[in-house]
Image 1 (spheres, helix red, strand yellow):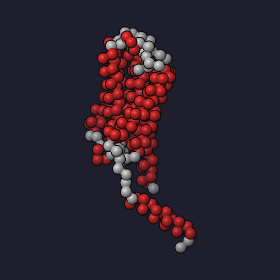
Image 2 (cartoon, rainbow, N blue to C red):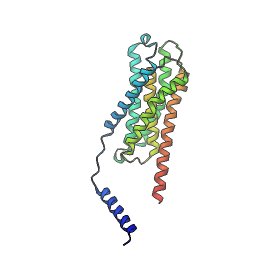
Image 3 (cartoon, rainbow, N blue to C red):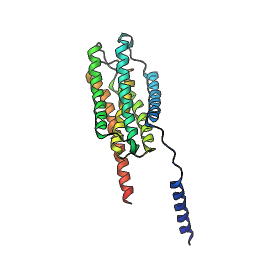
Image 4 (cartoon, rainbow, N blue to C red):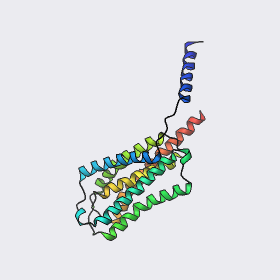
Length: 221
């Protein structure tokens, strides 16, 4: 047997031993969602320290303001949870539930700005560039850690996971920007904040497509 064949057999034996080894169980999706929440909170805190709290905070009804903030966070974390459940074959959400979750995420991006404009005094927003930068500073790290956690499992539909992860990260980022931007215009909230969140969802879908494409090519080899 040549040295090359010995090396090939040795590599094959090592791979077989690795495949037969004990598999470290995944944490429940709820626990992994908490990891994303902590990272998003850290990123949001950094954005708040850099950009400061919205200037009109003292004029807003605290109950309504906190309720809208909590609703954004709840929707974002629910979408992240759905994305992480997609990576566990036995826990994959029903297609109907997945569709409702995605529709709720997009709906939240457009409903909450209009609701807030109805209850708050008209105020100018900070520049669109500042808002988009602040949102990306929260959404991209959240999306990255979510995809890392998804990769620890096996998502049958990576594009679905990517859309859910990107949309959830975008909604969490919009919640953080809600603490920073004093603007009450529905157009600014939907076009700038919502647009940045949808862009993150598109980014997630694209990454999911790349994963699916690479998987198909690998299976053909």
